[in-house]
Amino acid sequence: MVAVPVILRTGRATLSPVSQAPATRQDKSVPQAAPIAPSGHHHPGAPLVDRFGRVHRDLRISLTDRCSLRCTYCMPEQGNEWLARTSILSTDEIVRVATVAAASGITTFRLTGGEPLLRTDIIDVVRRLAAIEGADGPVEIAMTTNGIRLDAVLPGLIEAGVNRLNISIDTLDRDRFRALTRRDRLDDVRAGIAAAAASGLRPLKLNAVAMRGINDDELVDLVAFALDHGAEMRFIEQMPLDAGHTWDRARMVTREEILAALSTRWHLEPVPGRGGAPAERFLIDGGPAAVGVIASVTAPFCGACDRLRLTADGQLRNCLFSNDEYDLMPLLRAGADDVAIDALLHECIAGKLPGHAIDDPSFLQPARGMNAIGG
Ligand code: SAM
Ligand code: SF4
View 1 (cartoon, rainbow, N blue to C red):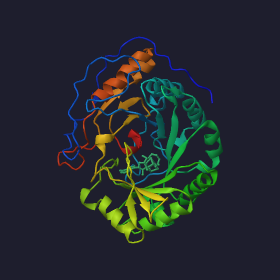
View 2: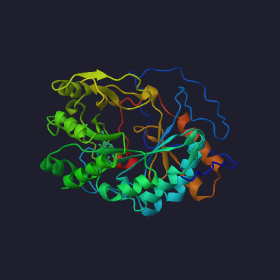
View 3: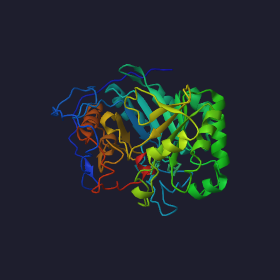
């Protein structure tokens, strides 16, 4: 692997966030650290620490808002307005932002979308990001994908330096899959999972959004399927991020219900030491295999959040549910220097709220769907 040295050039950004809607209220269920007064100044390469002392190490990069599926909880069936191709970050621009972020302590890049494998230069993107040397050594490259096309590109991705994969599969039933994703592609997803299992790339994680009346009778089967593939199943509570704005708290399958369903088959034992990870993990029958639950709604984990997002059109977001975006495009396309980019990264982190307040009646869903924000 070729290490790309991190060099910051001088300058200072003065851009303010672009607000899409009024900011959400604080989530009272989130453990509240006393806010730390922002200094307003930082030296280039200073860690990305917010007002609550959270150190940011994980940058989620959305490579495209487009997708090969149309999952009902994420995208509308039709009528989605795609980002113009000229508004999408080039690979040079992504690598530039990522290099600056790594100098300020980002250690993991998670590639997502939309569907990251739809990006035609995906292997080049992985290769160039994997070559970035952070302050503490090489960065880690993770990817969240729907698995379609994965069997074809996996050898290239591994050779380019991908370290970890999360593959989404919500159901093992072909008719259900077609209804849920509005595409008849379950066999392609299974081929992608089989390729990942055979590759030996570990840990391998499978993601499913648990949905009432859709797949909530399949939770045990999905865990068994993951175990058969040497993978770890993770169930996600459905979040209000669908482009159609149809999310309903009352219909959501909760963490408690997921654990109750799995406990009918296995003894689950909490794994300590979660850190900033979204998933709460449980050993299955004493381990070593485990299952994860991502309970963003009923048990938010904002207090340990170390994540920052870059959308495909160059907006920095400090939270999935934030209504503020920090626009890197004017900097990237008008010749700003790296210190200006670094300053906007710090400004974005300085504006982070303690929690997302999904469960609060005053919660406002972000204007963009999950495919456009980057899951
Ligand atoms: N297309 C890729 C995929 O599906 O894995 C990557 C992008 S997708 C937006 C990333 C993850 O977000 C997927 O695991 C998906 O299930 C999850 N997701 C999308 N919309 C969601 C929602 N409304 N609530 C919870 N999870 C959601
Ligand atoms: Fe596409 Fe992933 Fe959204 Fe499904 S969840 S529509 S696969 S971006």
